[in-house]
Image (cartoon, rainbow, N blue to C red; front, side, top):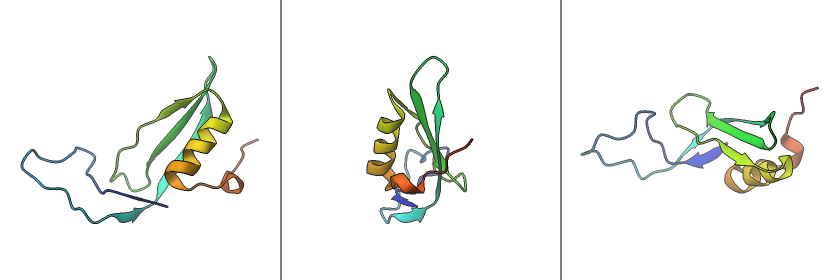
Length: 82
């Protein structure tokens, strides 16, 4: 889980103030091998309440390091698909 600012998928209305209180939001996080090289770290809130921004990385290790720094995903927590 990552503590992130709660923001609706469609953003805030122009005159609305965001809730400044962070909440725990579970994320679905995946790393995909790009066919033309590199890796995509794909993430989104499991309940659809927050938008993720996929990130591109030159190596799987770089993507895992980003996930560690941004979401606290430890190397032993990754599930490998065969």
